[in-house]
View (tube, rainbow, N blue to C red):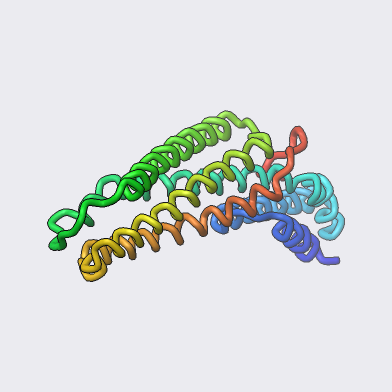
Length: 234
């Protein structure tokens, strides 16, 4: 088998074994491919036939089931950080802009009932919890990966599931609060800031949801990497 085909097949198998943020995955596979190409070139320069050089380079790189856990651990950690950072960005903007949906509103009506006020406070409280979880998780993952530590898969999955759970509660509570507001003040449905706020919340939910789906998929495949296997091994 030609050297290029052997290397290509090995990278393709590694590609199929991994799940995570597409940009980072492409970069990691490109670096792995470059490392294999360099190893094949060095072996050929030392007198090895191309096919034998490719086989040796692939063997030294490691089988897919040996090296994939380290790649997947980095992909999962990165995906979790993306979720956390998106949550922080959305809630930071929301904290500043949410009151603008109500300022200058032209409608009048009865004072909201106690249940509405409790739900409103609950949304605020859940938002603070989401910010705290996202901040602590993002900083913790950044410190761990910066120091070369692997985050235990169960801890990573648990933290990500906790954050996704809190975000889901915020989303459900926010939809309920928005719908309740529209039911009490019908003119709210034609108030431009309310319309813009609803569209912005929907967009933010999709943005976070896509990152959360990627993160959960990556975390599901994560196992403890074997000692000495790193994402950039070549």
